[in-house]
Image (tube, rainbow, N blue to C red; front, top):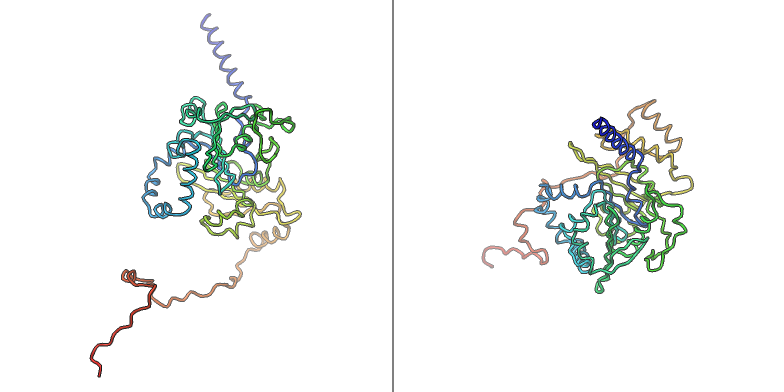
Length: 395
């Protein structure tokens, strides 16, 4: 009889736990805690695992020994990054090296870059509090000032020489790190204004920063996040579910930056100005790495913006494309003429037409293709060549 009672109690307990898990809401998406006006956002499903795999990979060792890394280590971009790292170390008291990154790396992670020139960012990592309190950053909190935003205490420090700011906080299983005080305050206020399900509270609009609390410097409402901005919402809607790693670019803000024009590897900023946002997603499987990209054009006029239903239809159509497809194109709310022309040329009356005339001149090679030899390295190009002397005696 006792065994039957114990069995029934265990069954009831298991049933209660399963019922609670079925009705308990999922954890809120961390992007909802990012303040608005970001230039670039990185999302990782499990950043700690990606970082560990990269550190253990042979590709990292090959890249560190490659000529590409040698050239990069002598570039002005690398020197600027080193200067920013030194400023961060002066403000935080810790170098932002790989050991520091491995300590604060969490599972789900979001990183928002707000100023590409000054490298001002806010990062939110899902990291258990039992692990975050053992990080070197948390152990050095006595060297920081204490501030408060949204009822949550955070730690702040500014380097007087460079003006670099560093702030961090821990709330539940979330670790926050920022290089601007108002970015930290904005993220904490968004966290405080969300309920258990992660949705924004309706009372956030009337919420004000209390006495002794830090508020946003630009006077923006505390309940606004990047989810309320068109470049973000249109991009993630068109792309669908995120993969292992996703990068979303606010091209309207980035394209006008002189730093992007100087360091953008593709050197096609003029072409990118026609787009308002871009998204690149990385999907990792046992067989391969797959990257998916989305480019959204700017709204050029009335009625040119894609409707919500059109963007959703594009996202659904993108999921139907085979994984081995190299390129596909999908348009939201296309014109009727475009649809009829596509049906006629691709389905109703497919035919091969004449090739379009080329607008490029023919390439003519006047030599065998050699561009030089090793002895040419000794030839001086800053002095005229010495005239050759004639042999023999003068008459």
